[in-house]
Length: 177
Ligand SMILES: CC(C)(COP(=O)(O)OP(=O)(O)OC[C@H]1O[C@@H](n2cnc3c(N)ncnc32)[C@H](O)[C@@H]1OP(=O)(O)O)[C@@H](O)C(=O)NCCC(=O)NCCS
Image (tube, rainbow, N blue to C red; front, top):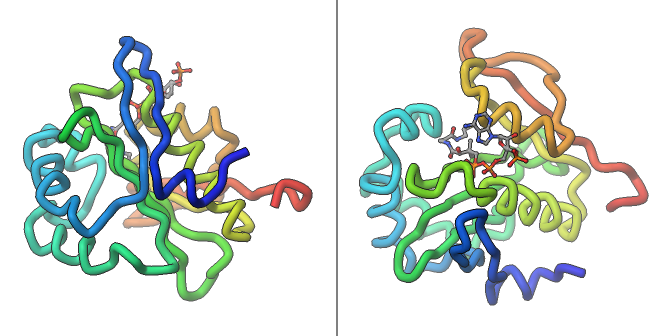
């Protein structure tokens, strides 16, 4: 069974192409690797699907400053020294037991099962931390992401961002928590 210490130390995960990546909690020292991931690992298309805000140094600085925040579970997937996946959830002020999730996989590593692996760890981590579910927002045209979320049990519960994005929710069963 997964523990929060496993997430600190890292979990080796096999990808569909035979590569192994280490998925672990983001550390303060990962800032430069994250900047490289945002600016070189993600194509302009992936950047747009992932984030409404610029993926620049100031964002990286904020992420680094939040490295030990108790209301965020932020994971990175390393292939060697390079980050190839980045995903997190953050507790929301108005609904603290249903955190908001966000994920991006490097273009070079999409379609290899890494998104699924990182989502599963974030979901397990949320259960370990006593959350009641997870929410996310996804552009309606992002078929790949929606297929992944549906596979994990997320359901559409509304729309946001001027109707451009679905709000999807995965509610944990009481006995899973
Ligand atoms: C969306 C994203 C997170 C998915 O991660 P991934 O590692 O590429 O996906 P996985 O390989 O784990 O695939 C998981 C499921 O997604 C679906 N999927 C994967 N590739 C797909 C494709 N090319 N077309 C349609 N569905 C696809 C499948 O249902 C797949 O399940 P399967 O492996 O059992 O067939 C990733 O592609 C990504 O970061 N894209 C750019 C940024 C983005 O869209 N972020 C999400 C914002 S809400």
